[in-house]
Image 1 (cartoon, rainbow, N blue to C red):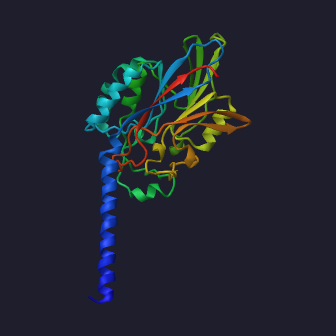
Image 2 (image 1 turned 90 degrees about the vertical axis):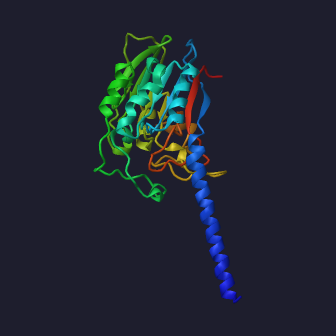
Image 3 (image 1 turned 60 degrees about the vertical axis):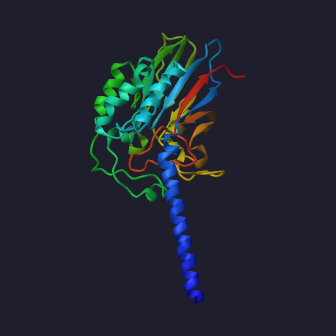
Length: 307
């Protein structure tokens, strides 16, 4: 066989092997890892002196489709962690039909005190897109996307007692500690307007300030920290969604540093350093339902006294 023919066959074989490997990784990411749900647990040592420890369940980026029975069953199981507070950082649904099954799956968690903020995929349905565009930087928002029933979703949350922190602040007393919440509408849609933290003078002296947003853009985190937040919550990043072992996330879909794409880290602004909790999320857009080296997660944080 001529040398050129041998080289051509070798190249074709290599191309085929790469294609097969790529297809295998996509299948693994969609069929296995995207359904390999986990609960990450953390200790959050910010409890005011004299306060009793309490537990927070952080939910984010569920991106629910009604057909995702395994996800619905897993969501239903989360009540077993017995949280004292639920923090939901948005992107709950993936279709107009997702609201009723989501509410049913959350079930008893809706009876727990909770707060929430919107994400772009609470407002708008996902559209087909080139998945490589995600790796190029923050995703663009198509103004022609169809609207989802966000009023129904948010109204259901509020009717069960969850506080809507969309550019608003509220106080809630939990175990003799005043929790001062403030949050924003989705910064990825540039709908954020920082409301500042509330502070009711009649509430207990012990208090915690909790900042909540969907997309952890630096401008929002800086403002929250400088305004006196004791802890920050966010989602949106999907933990990078596609990660490289021993390297981490390739992107965060915002201007947050890659190494903070998920987990409990810290944020410094205005001379203050506060804990930053970013969830890797429970789902992904139904148009790109693949994860790699980045398991879907809910997060349990036990708020305790500093050591």
